[in-house]
Image 1 (tube, rainbow, N blue to C red):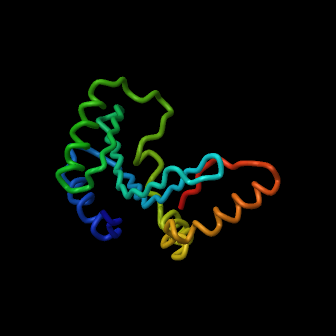
Image 2: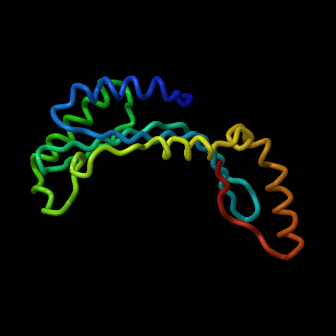
Length: 156
């Protein structure tokens, strides 16, 4: 699986949100994770995974419901919306003073998107086990010279 681009993600999620039974907000998290776990100064568990998560929050009057799913297709987001809507119906209303969307007027989230884009590094994203191996080997070697063994995880 590869990470999907923002146009594809926003297209499917936007289509699902247009059909929401009430006001709704979606948050998307995309992960392309490469983890290298080590113990006793030896790599023992390399892992790589890609995942997309969408969390939808719905507002049923002053009742709030939320659901998270890793199926970001229109039908998957619609399922999450139904679960969130049912959850909202089972919960008490938000207390007075708790601001709901629209209470404070529209906001501009373009700064959040720009900050996320600035955090991207192509070399880090492309680094695989072969790129990490020399750095880990040097760390293990130095620790060994100091009479230590290393344990931990390195992720990108």
